[in-house]
Length: 224
Ligand code: ADP
Ligand code: ADP
Image (cartoon, rainbow, N blue to C red; front, top):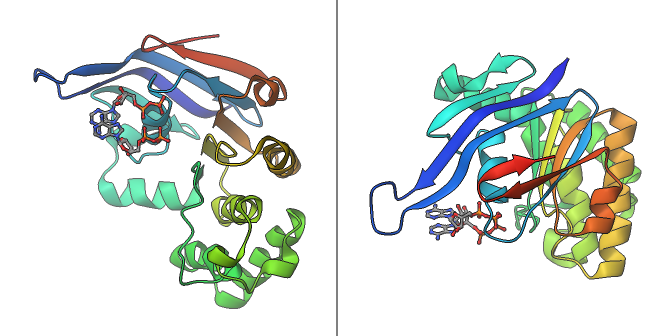
């Protein structure tokens, strides 16, 4: 039972032009359901590119992306957008919360876009905020929150529509070591409680060791 399958993914930027970069060369990755996997690589190795392809934010030159058994590379734009909204949660290094909305509203909005009613969406948002320890900050805008609080809210937003797959690109890379440790712990608790499958890129080997398995991205290829 596979949450995510990447098969033979290749990606080159500026193909055939002066700045050609072959970022991914025949990358294959499989995540079982409920598995939490670390992706470790030096900066510039292609972590973001791989996560964006897995998250349907970018397309590979060749290869297939299967989420929950559906081959997403064969779907049209509308179906990919629906999958991105409902089946996949994405977390960036920087929170990317909407600045003009409160923490709660930032978690409500993706649910409304997914067809959930507003009362139910608010209740779920409040419950998620409570689980990551920032229930008291629901009415604050992102600028009024600390870095750690902003990331906790971003985690809640990623999980708003109860996706089966979570993709995270250095989710605590922007925080000081102590805060990073605490916030990462909150993320792992949330992931384990919900039985999510997750692929989490990190530079931090201590954090990587807390996951089920570590993958390394090296010279365009993934090694166990
Ligand atoms: P990482 O997340 O591991 O730091 P990235 O996936 O962001 O790596 O980038 C991998 C390589 O591809 C880098 O050399 C980067 O400069 C290059 N790259 C990333 N995106 C683009 C793009 N849109 N156009 C050209 N080169 C890019
Ligand atoms: P991160 O690795 O944290 O995602 P980057 O600075 O590598 O941050 O990339 C930010 C954005 O810029 C990404 O969307 C990536 O595709 C793009 N990018 C990265 N490197 C290049 C590049 N050399 N040329 C064009 N776009 C790039």
